[in-house]
Image (cartoon, rainbow, N blue to C red; front, side, top):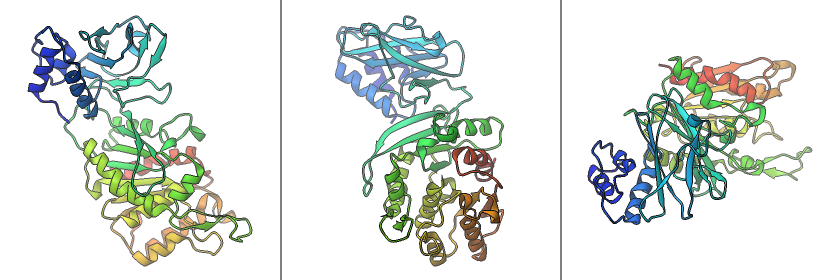
Length: 416
């Protein structure tokens, strides 16, 4: 949502020469002071800016302007990595007699910075409630200048969709310069998003942001947006990531049947989440620019989603995918049956696994992944073109192994 020049000028007149509102519309003229300030008009423009792509704070060159709504007496400050987290470096000023406060800060150089607001009256430090950009390490808010070499993460809040039980956390990676460039980007949707960026995730997580930043910086891939969809529990994961129920009981006696909700989940991602992402971010929405990826059960649901929505996703990948699901007690997995029924679909597919091969066929899903790649080849998929298959001998079934294989896949899908 863009703020018009006229709206910015009206707000500037209301805001007593506050530069931050001039920056809202990119204007360079001085604001005009008046005696009265309408807090509700300030709030309307501030909230609209928060919903826009750039969001808060407003960054213009090396100047960053912050706003905060706080009913207390303060004083309030902004402490950031550029000032060595000094809580007294930058005091916010109250806007007239409203509950709004602001400060404009001169940054020392172009780059990425973290910050928090501080209530000196209570000693409380807190993230910027108007800024979707956050770090994982300490929950700090993040700001970037136009020439920052790093991408950033945004938390979209709970995602609710028809057919899904509960909500899902969605975290979005935007490439360097995305807030300032007039460019549209391909998108990768990633399952098990709780492990995508968090360095404290099991086995160090996927570290997708660091990998993508590095590949972009070296010119090995085109910049892209990554949408990571987190899953809250193991029970939710089994339900949402599996296309049919299966028997998990050790004796295959039907005493522990679970799963079968992947159709609702895949529909929610394709028909609800993707349109939201396309509306909010500068994406290239066509199927040829849209990929879906996961590992283990996440790999199973990524491939299943592509078979269910080949008109939405042009690339789909499963790392160590659990392709035996649906046949744990009766032989062949459900995705084999689906692939035979549907035949070749116009989607570029990626499969991989680790394990030790024939010495232990089930390790890291080596046997079913190899068999599925063979099935696809019989349907006319061409290795190295619309089918990529990789076996990494000895690789384990964990995030560290999938992280190690991710760069090669990104080069194949998003090469320059």
